[in-house]
Length: 138
Image 1 (cartoon, rainbow, N blue to C red):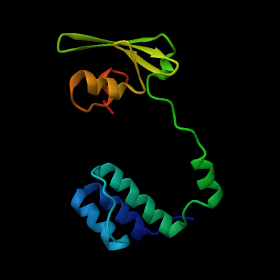
Image 2: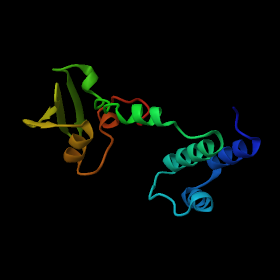
Image 3: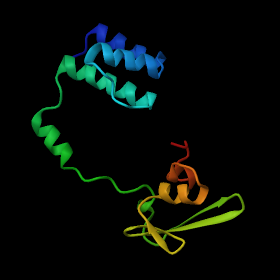
């Protein structure tokens, strides 16, 4: 099975569209758009919906298998228990120790590096990027 050339053109056109344009495409096909503010995520959602509409959505067994998958561990836990992650932030050394159940910072266990980065800086941040675990900043 392959997508029609019309669907391929429509999906490719999403790359040039902004959030409001993407919401209009969604509205034209399926009614009120989801409350997404991420252009990238809305592009992916639209592309998937169009492809699923044309080729068929995931079958029941696949949906069930995906739903039963456990969440992936937080970025940084793969460094191993006892690993130390450091970041100098505005003259303050932030030192985090990887534990089996999360991350230890300031004598407290946190579930994610993002929570620590937010607490340390006062603004929402991607924790793995903040601590230099992602080169591309994503």
